[in-house]
Image (cartoon, rainbow, N blue to C red):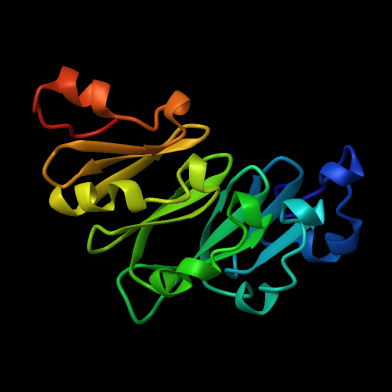
Length: 208
């Protein structure tokens, strides 16, 4: 609403019932992000409010104490969310996740690489990818959908690191610092960039 409030309607299991958090949605809401069955409201004090199906990230109680301030962006996958928080100790952000572990709600395996210095986070339906200030790419979620960057990690390093990240429904792609491209994830969803690399013939890429 114009006063910064938010209301929800529709199927309760898909985020249509926000009554449990309605008092927190009366004012200060500046943006709302949703995935398959849950919502996250971003407030002007840097906090967030979640509701909807708990299995889709509608319940962030496990990380709620870390989501009360400094949140600047929310990135959703199909059944999970990632929050970017300002990090006073770095030039980038710290990333927190919650929701379905299989689609990126559990980033504990890479959590140390998400503590500060993260410049960008993108998500497809099943996984997340983060770009750090040194060009390193950190991924989590469904391995077959791009949640495992290991197969192309050396290619990314050889290209000087990632300059930008992109996504399809089940794959990721990066433009590297040397102008080349690299993709990983589900092959049928663009996880193999070799055909495009051949067509480019060494021409440098600026954007995708």
